[in-house]
Image (cartoon, rainbow, N blue to C red; front, side, top):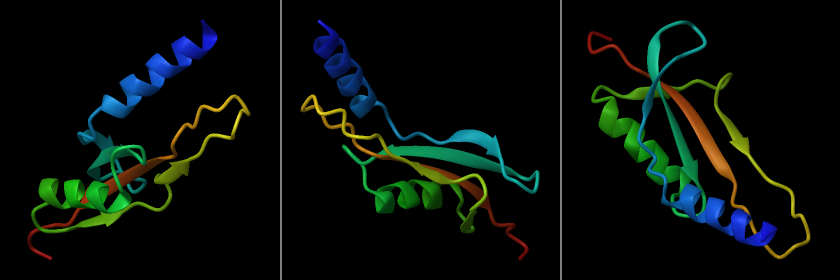
Length: 94
């Protein structure tokens, strides 16, 4: 039963989209947070999503962006890593 619940939660997280959500950067400017699971999305696809939302370019906030990894529990269920990118859109006048 426990493995079934874990498998269901994994499938739901794999189906989750990598839609950007509004998020403030570390310097207080508006930006986006994009979470990409390595199960179905590469880091490059995550960056492509950021460029789609920031038409004048973007900068990744290194203070708020991170990679989340999960240790192997030894039960045969692999949980892929997740990349969390916080990006700030560049000013069009710059």
